[in-house]
Length: 281
Image 1 (cartoon, rainbow, N blue to C red):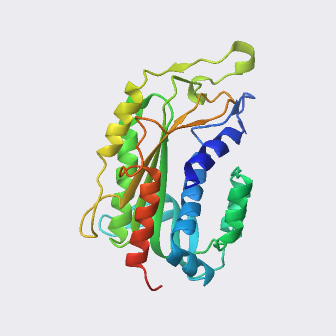
Image 2: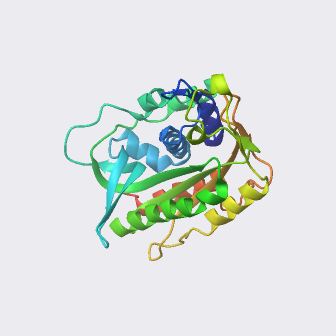
């Protein structure tokens, strides 16, 4: 699977300038990292799931970005990062799956670019019937403090998705920073080139382990009668947010191949569920 490497590489290359003239790879008030993560996951899904490729080639499915999904049971709404859906009524959007890679600043290798040309180019469409909803959340610093928010935001996502329809595949992706220090934009609301940055120090691996354990507490389901994510992956990165390369952490405590929280397992599971639930669209 290409996704984790694409995510790390694209965050490395991201450059957001704030009002103080600071340049950030990760900026907490931006959803760039979530969009890149969901794009990368959909890329691997298109490569893995033959039925999804066929539906895309036939124009039977498209995608929506930041789609507001309504929980029919509780009358609540939530914006979801990316959905794969049947086209609804109304004009198509301007973006395609390939054009989004440029819009999001996705950094691809030559091999990945060849693979991208080989898969059908999904069209952004008005959202009709949602088949798959992807949601990504990052925990970059102050891990313990962020745990309630991380748990609540991911939980509210799958609750809203399945409150709308229990057939929708809900896939979650948690990106956790395993670095020992981090330069937080929230704690550096001044020009850091003059004063030098304030560092957040992390107790590692304890902070990462606690975050992993919290993510593992989020409900998962094995059939449509239950509530929870249909697939949930955890990716660890090492990121200081100082312009240096973002490194994937593939050794422990990162989930290992065949672990239910490994990224590859999540992609394969979503592909199998898609083929089982949506043979005809």
